[in-house]
Length: 455
Image (cartoon, rainbow, N blue to C red; front, top):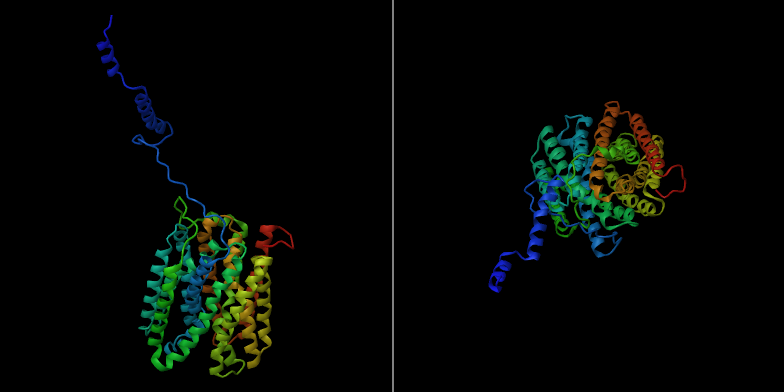
């Protein structure tokens, strides 16, 4: 017979059942990991916490409209200065770079525009990964540095490096946040909100040329450009302080260039349509002053203000059509105004006097305005996965940048020393009409042959 003392000693040497169960459960974890093909040193299965969806955009409110205001400030600087290049071109042709051809000088503006848009191929995935502050800080520093270097330039290649390359790349870093922030905060009002934001480019394109024209005779070109650099720095500070991401970054890393998006036919046709349109869009922004002086006999003092008139009219051209796009769809609106822009371009063939050129500048500024304000809503409308919007916008902006790169030098080459204005006008009109046709094809690819489809 076993005594009570011996029985208690045997019980104390046996592990508790609950402890045995816990130990067995812990030991099975690495075994299960091995069976699932995970590394053998995994002692626990780690799971990343799921990202919480912020829900649908608020479509308004103080926080949302603050993002529009910040975007407005960036567009004021980026597109405002890019659209001011017509004034830079006039200064270079008549003063600083007088020995260079108009085609060579136009390459500075075209490459600057290209690099601003081409850089977004790389900044788009960075934006999708949630690095808003990085893009804003780096872009602001590079842009201001480029403007300061521009003030020290004397030769063609110095201007090209500072203005086209350095400023162009810097603008590309801040242009992506300005373009992609608004769709995160708006849904049904997205087109209108983007239109409000892009009116900053119209105001900037009015203020910067006047500033350049008025300050240059008083303080010189170098200090005028430095003043522009200080304005960029000061107006970027509110954006650095107030811009906020609403959507969480994706759990997985994104490729810098993802060509699978080009297999999406509506998206691809939209990109091609904008590429063709921008081949002709900015021709009159660059050359309307020269046309007024050479053909219409306009005085140089009044001719200077034609670019400001054109950009001021584009303020309403980026606001009213975008409001309409909220009701009829951004693609439908783009097709309509693209066709009107092309038809109006051909009308310039019959305009040979100053009042007519002034009226043309105002009308063209209005009807061509949607080419700047509608690409973002159009690309958003053909992008069901909004977490990839930055990547898609960046690739579409690259198409636009190449359009501007090719379009203005081609127009300058057509113009030549013989002043072939008929060829320039036909080039612009044909490209704008062709763009409208391709965007129509993108709309059909998206919705089919449904005339009343809101797209």
